[in-house]
Image 1 (spheres, rainbow over the protein chains, first blue to last red):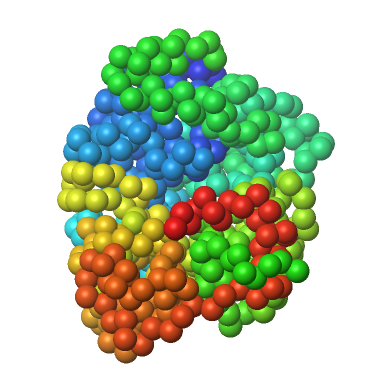
Image 2: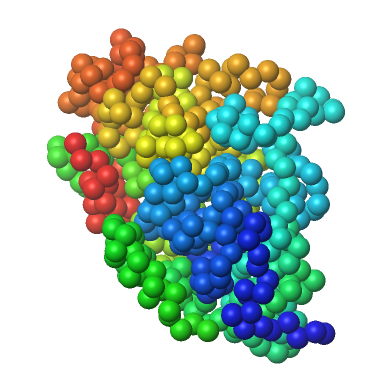
Length: 272
Length: 255
């Protein structure tokens, strides 16, 4: 099996301006923050970002990297709203595809299955259809039901963070929730996965059940060992959300000068 | 037993919300906010024992977990429901939500997405989240911790949760599971008349009809309003000593 391990700094060679990039995790949980930091360090722009958003979205918006955001919500969990996402929206500086959360999952599932759409009841009669006028409905061929046809989302690149993987790219989550990281990997042409720890394949199931093997190497192009690579979001059971860091991030958003200092020190942090 | 003479408004709200779960049976209780969370747990411990409770993370708990803490704080896990399964469960209809609302109109359209023009909102909120899907799949109630004309508006800026007018206007059978129940606020319990319009079902003790009318941004029928019931001694005991000993409910209800 090919050794797919790579360094964080190698991410730059996988990204180009204008790409559609999926970011795994959920809110402020198991976000691939070390990989996001590398994105911030790169010179790519005009990204379409597909995510259940957390601070990844705020940081990328603040850095002017985002052209379009496809999301079900953006939240820091314990802090309900991300200040930079909010500022970008209120300035009208990013395009948005705001979906119902179930619709977002339908888009991922359809994308992973290479289907042009997946039908869903969610969104009918709501302003999700007004805000996304390109969305179409589809009539059931069997009865008189009409559904929203959520277009499948395909990504050029997915970024995810798990607890462990082997060098071949078999990824394992040890926390209680898989979120949707396997779907991101399957709906993307390539997936870069950072992990807390790279271990020999046989060690993956020595102390954890095989059901925890969430992502198969079939769907992974690169593996980065990045201990703490989800910080300041959570990566259970290795660590919880760093509430102090979250507060510092939100407080720094209050004025441009404080933010510049925060962003500079955040980018300089030696997580390589 | 607790003293029933010093009942707070928050406690009245908790039982008003708890009554919304009456008859729900064996479904997943999805409760957003402190008062709704306490209410679902209270309902399970009293008149609705089959209700299925989550710890707010990804475990279903066979008895109420400590408020604000997940399964790791103790308790008995009876099942696993990570986020992906939540969407599967809600699509089956075996779920009942009590959500917040930044805006609600007379038809029960709810907004949690943004204020102003969605293209360049004056205030970005959290996004529609699950409201569009919840409201077309299973029963949905709303909890408004501060009843005001800023919340109860003529027209919401973004229809996140689908109201009765929109659901009725939708042709075909796809919205047959649309089911709005009640809107519980810190002043009153509202429900819907036959035309699908919000009306006042009951006023909390000490609240006048004029107060509710003034704090509602559209004309609302208060003519049939009764008085919201008080918690029983047993309910008070459970709220105060078992479910919310730290008194978090009083932080959410300030009147």
